[in-house]
Amino acid sequence: MSTWFVYNTPAISAAIRQAMSEQALHGVQAAAVPRPERAIPASLHTDLAIARQEIQELKREREALKHRLQLALGAEIDNAVQPELVQKVQGLERHTQALTRDLAEARTQAARLTEQQQESDETIASLRLTLRKAMRTLP
Image 1 (cartoon, helix red, strand yellow):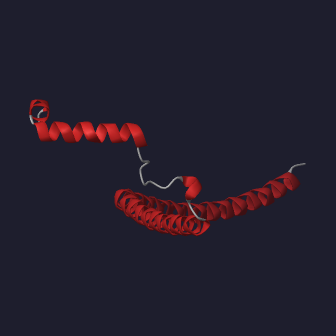
Image 2: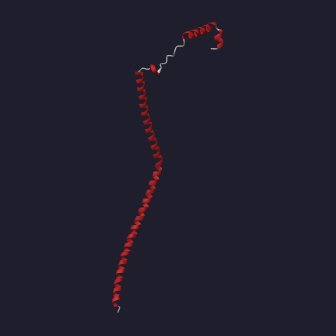
Image 3: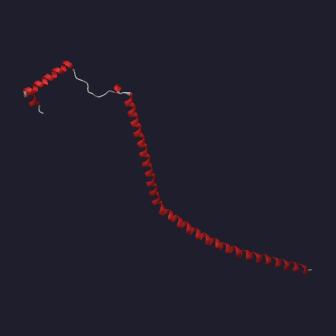
C-alpha cells in the first residue's frame, strides 16, 4: 500500500489517527510469546525428555554411520591390498621353491663330502700304516 493512498484517503487516515491515539492512551500490548519464567516444570520436563530422545536417536545414527564407514574402508583396503598380497604370496612361493632346490643341492653336496671324508680317512689310515711299516724297516 502506498503512503500517498493512506494520507489522501480520509477514512483510512482517520482510522490510523484513532489507532495512534488509543495506543498513546493505553500503551502497546505485549506479544503473546511465553517467557522462560512463565514455563511450567512439566513442559520443561517434556522438553528435556524430547531432547534426550533426540540425542539417543542421533547416537544410534552416528554408530550406524560409523559401522558403515568401517565396512566401506575395510572393503576398500581389502580391494586395494589384495593384488599386493597375491604378489607377495607368489614371491614367497618362488623363494620357497628356490630354497628347497638349494637345500636338496646342499644335502647332495654334504653326502658327497661325507663320502670324500670317509675315503680320505681310509687313505690317511692306510698311509699311516704304510709309514709305520716303512719306519720299522729302516735301520
